Length: 174
Ligand SMILES: [Fe+2]
Image 1 (tube, rainbow, N blue to C red):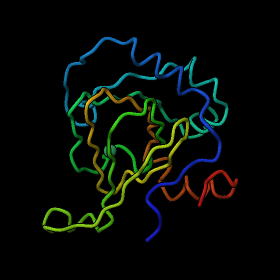
Image 2 (cartoon, rainbow, N blue to C red):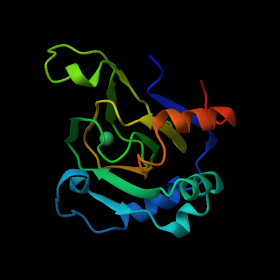
Image 3 (cartoon, helix red, strand yellow):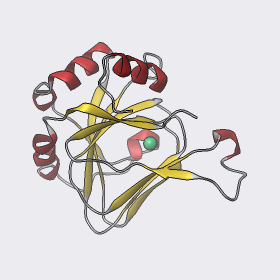
Image 4 (cartoon, rainbow, N blue to C red):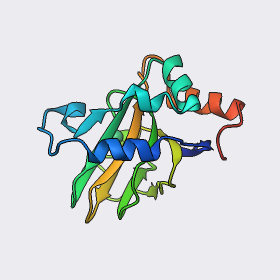
């Protein structure tokens, strides 16, 4: 099976600015449904534009940037994303948390009792390209956790396509 996530070689330049933005926003946010149920803010373009790699990629694929948060002792249940098959994520603070990806077929997820998984360990100021089309989940512990994520429209680009493109440009670690 191919890898489910990759580390981007180009370091993120906007992590601190996005963190400052996130902690200055009012909380908590109201709950809605589906994708909208996740507490989040649209990331300001003025910040995103400062990272040329990111901004060019977002423009190319008509993508949008968001800052999400988990509150303390919150988990994001096992799911796969409806709105995209690829994400580009950046952790904005380093708190105790875990992010897991299931390595089996989606079809048997709900009927299996036992499953295999791997852990995505975010590095600071580092973009991670991830396969959002397979089951994944997140567990957050004592502190608020903030992260930035890019929504690539699924009808425009898939995980495999973005990985292939970035690999071609030698922008991903194997
Ligand atoms: Fe997700």
